[in-house]
Image (cartoon, rainbow, N blue to C red; front, top):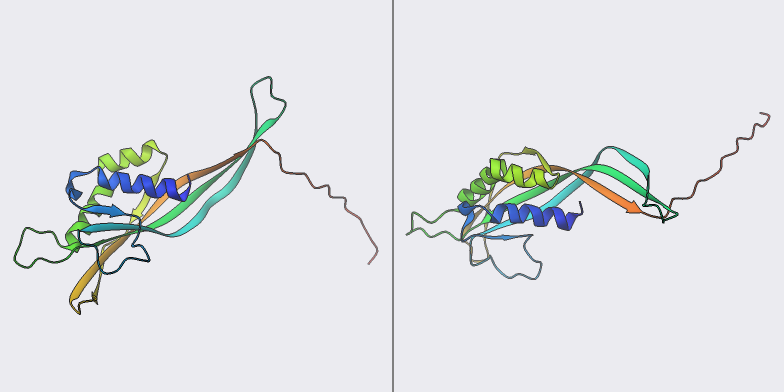
Length: 178
C-alpha cells in the first residue's frame, strides 16, 4: 500500500465516526497556511516508515496466451503516523471540545472495533498507539494554546508487480594465488 493510500484510509476511518462530527480531518497543515484553522481539525502526518522482515520475491505464471511471467515483490512495512489536533478555545462554552478532547476521541476511534475492522479489510493492522502528549505553545496572537498528539504504528504490505524480470548477473569465481 502506497503512502497516499494509507493516509487516505486513515483519514476516512477517522471521518466515518460520529465522535468527530464537525471536525475537519486533514493530511497535515499546509505550508502556505496562515494562522490556525478556523474549525477544530485533526491532522495526520507520516513521520517514519521501516521495512519489517525480509523482501519476498516470486514469479507467477500469467494466463496461457502470455509468454511472460509476473514478477512480484512483497515487503511488510511499519509506518508511524502522528495524529494531532487543534481547536480554538471558547472559554464561555463549556461544551465546546478542547484540542485534547478531540485528540483523545481520535485515539479512541482508532482503538475501536469499527476502525479495526475497516483497517483489517485493507490488510492494515495497528501495532501500537502511544499515549497522548500535549505540547503548549504561544500562537500568533500571543495566546497559550495546546498541540496534543499521539503516534499510531501501522503494519501493512507493500506489493510491487512487474512483467519484466530483473536481470540475472552471472558470477564466476576465480581462484588466484596469494
